[in-house]
Amino acid sequence: MAGGLFALKISYVLSTALVLPITQGALYVSTSRVRVAAFMDAVPMKPGQLLVDLGCGDGRVLRMATKRYGIKTIGYEVNWMACLIARLLCMGDRTIKIKRKNFWKENLSAADVVFCYLYPDVMQRLSKKLISDLKPGTVVASCNFSMPGFTPSNVLRPGGSLHNDPLYIYHI
Image 1: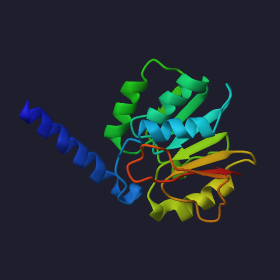
Image 2: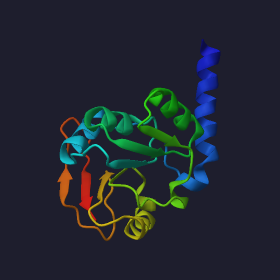
Image 3: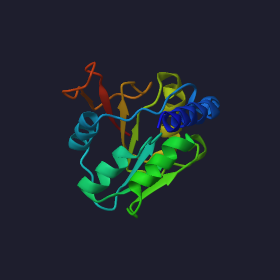
């Protein structure tokens, strides 16, 4: 048992270390259910819409969105271990696509809603990409860190958040 846990821990460290040039140190951390629920309440979605999660981790946001709204979702994740977990947890749901790809190289123009929980170091670059890629009316949600150059239409502070961290909602 101890050997198996050690192997899992080593796998996690390796999967994180291998993608450091892309993630710039961001770790795979699940977004709390309270924060995801607050996002879902603030951003109602309709069947036929597409939600894109940048750095989807275990796919929690994707699963909750498809269950609640019956929408299509795409999650991008470069960490192979997180991607594997997401694919396993989302197995059987054809409305969820998990891509082990670098979202910086993808065109996000089909998205109706974009969700992210990324480090502040990448937010300036992400703002430029989203302005370039997204169509008017697209909603962007960012956990903890604001988007430079964007004005939030709403800033949520979900109850139960450990540090009362903000969730920024933007409309392109």
